[in-house]
Length: 406
Image (cartoon, rainbow, N blue to C red; front, side, top):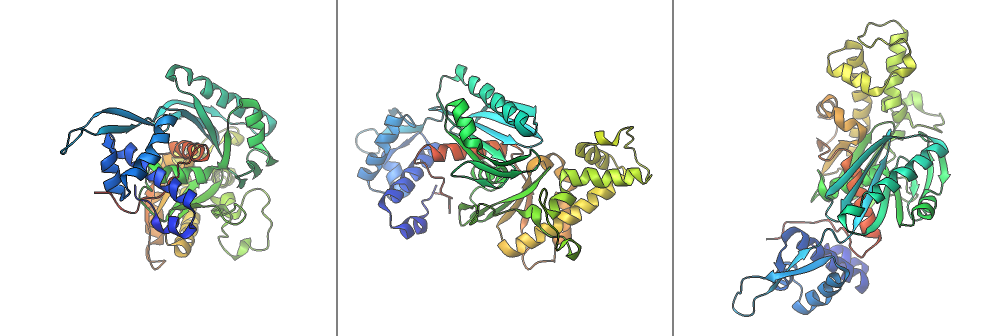
């Protein structure tokens, strides 16, 4: 990991510079350990006393362990340092059509996974609390304390206060979710927009590693985007950056009010896929999707049918690809990211979308970005939650690497 010196120097803040150096040291120990103090000093261009001054508190905190002596290079054999990824554990939860949760260590290694259908309203909050509590209880056999909980919600989220402003799928408006969970669980809880967590997870452990500018698009019941700009998560002035689900597809959608779902979400989100499929079926179009009760139709049924060659379902998917392609092309033209990663609930059906979107935007904009499917699926949100909880409960900053240390 390389310290982003421009970022550190720009602040002129000695405390922040120390945090950045500490983060660089910790990340290098994690990547290269076992490693000696002298090698840390050489690779990071820091003085040996600075290394010692920063490493010693990390040892006291249990994040770094001293191991056996290494080979001598002409003098005393150096004590080698390793990263203690099991110093504590973190629970990460993604709230979508399902609750997807995991118990992970500080290295992002997942020990326990849970999945449970989500519910709206107060029932959904109660189910979320029980779901997190079960994951916390699963930490017992691993013998490490819980450090915190990160939760991703499909909503504009006031991060500092942990308030969910409006999650239409759940009917949660101005919900102080952080306070309610902390009062019940007795642990630090951090609430973030779910696609921001996906973006952090991809940047840390997935398809966005070592990229300074990254756009992650999550498609499911809602549609959102997360932005890493110049190596930092960008939330926007009102925490509303990346609300790509409100992209206007054409002039017919101007002058309307979107209280629940945005224009793009209503067309290309999972509810839009189901609605457009149902309209075709009700009009009598032929399909293998034969249901006596169309209210039972799910987006997964449509996508599976499209993959199997059903003409009606494929037409719905083609429309969805067109809508998404417009949003992707517009976002890429404005942001010019290194890469666009598509994930969320759609990741399971990425073969129906990624290549077609890539083909549709080719030639539309000056520079077509690389488009990839998520490496991590919904684990990206869980790992993003781990990164967020770790960052908020320690001085460990996830500073983007600019080049590989040699």
